[in-house]
Image 1 (cartoon, rainbow, N blue to C red):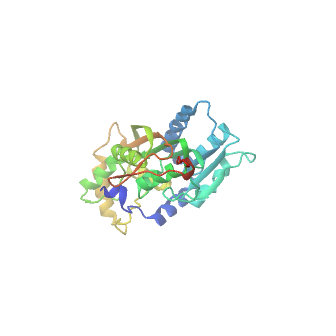
Image 2: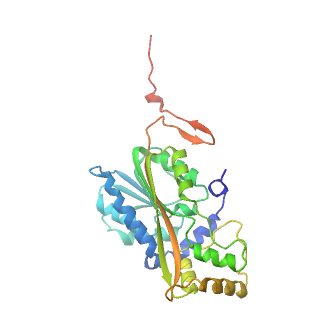
Image 3: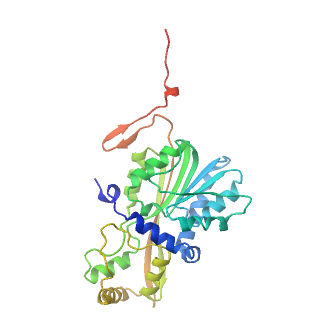
Length: 297
């Protein structure tokens, strides 16, 4: 069993605080998030002529994607769900008052929605902060209607690898950075949840900075700090940070410091009733009672 996927790695309250604090200025600094979001929105073309009646944007942040999808399908019930209430307060800025978006403060692994009530689940760079990825994907399957579409992106383990290496070179055994699931783990979780025709891909983006401090300030501005439950408490002192900065400075290329961000994207379709899901090493299948054939004598 992989502890990254099955143990409570992240501190929920810290996540709420970090993203809530970042809400007001998030849209201005989240450059990579916007790029990933735009690419994910393009993949909605797979719906072709289908018109969804209900769309769930999980980890909506300030709701830019929710607004785009509401504009594309004005009659659809678009729901923006986020763990941070201040993020949801930004959502009306990304839509017209005559095209309102419903807002729900909640968690990906505990969706406050009924079974089989959603046609599309869209989730951009949210699931890396979910403590239990299989549980979240099982929830996605639960609320999706048969043949419903799941589109998601999440950060992979090569994200911030230069910063992680700098901490290690500075003598930190556990760099103050959150762990992320690899593409194989995301794929396994998709299969375990029962999604069919899954397609996964990964991209590595390299952003550059004048120095380490602008990078650290950006991480703070987008709420992407160390959210581990067992993270070291305290600042660790200026000497610790100075050692890390010195190690990172050795990685300069053409006068700039690189920062890698690995983005994993996945697409899958919800199966019909009776399709199995995995729980441990066992396949579990469930059937609606009205779909069980019966004969009478």
